[in-house]
Length: 448
Ligand code: AMP
Picture 1 (spheres, helix red, strand yellow):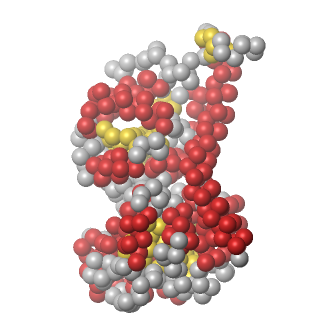
Picture 2 (cartoon, rainbow, N blue to C red):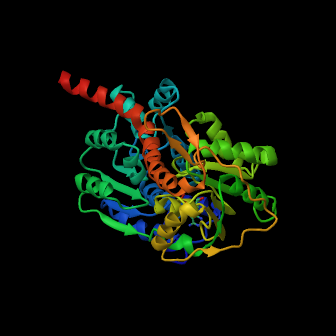
Picture 3 (spheres, helix red, strand yellow):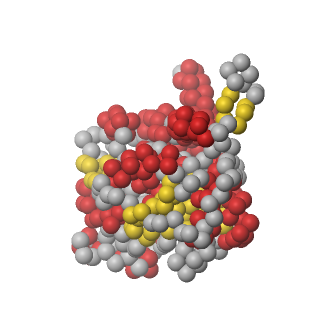
């Protein structure tokens, strides 16, 4: 599709599109428009970066007539607070000339203020499922006017354990409604979920490894260990002309803090970090500063960064080769977006070679290997995890460091542990809202 004119959209939306500088619809936008306008349920398979937010918002806004109705007519559910803020901001831009009332609600902040905001009326509510459910249960929000519901990042929602809350909310919605769902990946969980709630949905799909990959130059360096990776990264980041906006992915919070400290010493205020142990305000500020180009380098974990809309990333650095190859796809999808060129660099150690091979097999593409720069110092320092250790069977407290002969076995064990820690992060994240939701739900039902 060559232009937005082909979609027959309102003047107000055309002005907003012109302000945003969008020239033509992205493939997911072109394909979703008529499906959503027709009123059928839709499942969109598209990654962040493909323009998926506008793919569902454009037809929804086109269809949303002015109304004094207090209760929302459109409900958008997303997995994280960051995503709520981001989507509200996008909707405000799209709806600039259409007097759209949009409110974002999410957990971890004062519920009373959100109750007041909701009481004033809204056309669109963007919410995380836990807080939305709390607002509905406390009768601050009614869902009886909802005609369209969008569930974005369903794969992440189900990963974070939101299935129960989503189910509860969907059951409270009017039967006559349109369901629109977006997911970056199709998993067994997502498939079951669709079949439970959707009526013969039309699937619109832009290949997971499709458009963005073509815009991304991918390179890899084989590196000795964590601290050598840090030395190489410091070396690369000194090139300020090319590395203008850099997103560095690390596997967990611990590596995030460790790497941040190293980079902070060198680059100071040019670098920030986000992970789930940082306060929400800190995270929001870090993302805002990064987007406003006040900080050049942002260190993040996979879970934190998923779904975030970060523009104009020049480089994605993979500080490790992730065990789940899909995570690599999500990471590099943050650059080369909306038809811009981007670069991805993978730093991998010998023991990460299998993970790298799995990534290459998923993409059906060989990542170009670069020579390790001679001027970069190879560090002999090892992280706690990298140090070979032996635990005496009868004395688990007595951890003794041993020589390289034990290297191989220890590394194999570590790999399995890392997989577990990813699951633990997810589990830890959803524990609180799920328990709260469960309790209220059961109490309410018992009383009936
Ligand atoms: P999303 O996949 O929704 O997170 O969008 C990715 C980025 O692409 C956002 O920064 C949008 O503002 C931008 N975008 C969305 N649609 C278009 C378009 N048709 N042309 C250019 N950029 C777009």
